[in-house]
Image 1 (tube, rainbow, N blue to C red):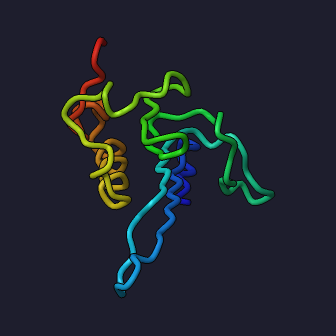
Image 2 (cartoon, rainbow, N blue to C red; image 1 turned 90 degrees about the horizontal axis):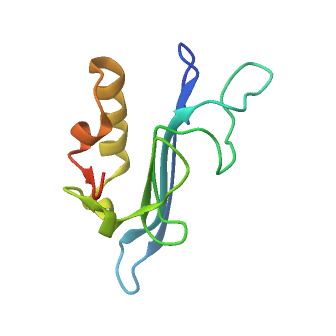
Length: 120
């Protein structure tokens, strides 16, 4: 969790890896990358892991199949709804760099990550 106290937003990154059978390697099998308003804080004002319905700017996760939330919880945009970005290729560092770029330079995540939601 990375907490931006100046505007009450935070980044939350969660990943789960499984070992590849017979190899000394692992692969990412589940993940959730979240950036949005901090809705729940501890007694020191630090962001706590929130609920799935917390306010958000962008989230990419694999719960129920890979999808993106953009500016709101619903709808879930599956890969077929998104052009220009393969959600499976987004790594935690890419997500964090995109958030930092947006926070320092401004702009829409559609331009930062290079995607378009089809039909919008």
